[in-house]
Length: 301
Image 1 (cartoon, rainbow, N blue to C red):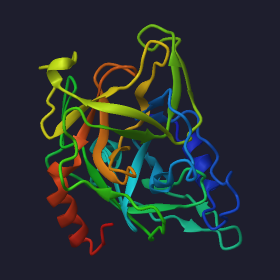
Image 2: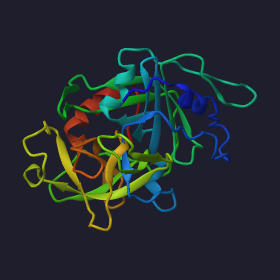
Image 3: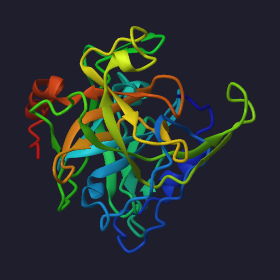
């Protein structure tokens, strides 16, 4: 998750100009920082093809300990839902609120830690002023991660037409189908234990269909703690390989007629980019989300 080099992210952050909506290249695409879980084999989405995509954001996290990228869902004008392990780099640290150049509107990044978010076409975004990790979050190793969920309080509200809402009904049931979405690595092949492997990431939002699976139907059965989580299997055939990889952590698993409900938060894969993935069940944490939003005096969608 960590990367000693901050230069790629810092260069990107300094070039952000969210006040210039007509400039889709306002955020340079970083190439070297670590990305936590992204989609391979999925098509690039736009607000025209998938209206909900305007509510899914790329998260750039920089601290003195390293750099990471994740994905998050806008579940309120000033509230972003993501994975818990995405914010561990800044846990217990006060986030810095960068100033903007009065002439260009670009962020002036002079200190760390900072969390910056940007939408798919890099025209909307802001910074986080607070990161809240679930109090029961625990990474015990060997794929055992509990309460992998977190909230980001944004410096300013973001207005979208197509709003995402947290699932309060328990839509993460076996056999149900939905869409996973995320930014990050979209190609990974070759190599041995990561040595010489080919990876590429264009940091565009992608989506792919998945089905909720039973633990007994997968290789993960009995090998990881999946309490308050569910498994998603890629709907693919031999000619259509793909799945959760590096870049998607924190991204949504969406259900509903218009994919407007966030039923899961992508947590991790069970053994690589083409294996079963694990998502945190949002309905199991609805009270914590509601209580946290209330404590911050922030509305939910």
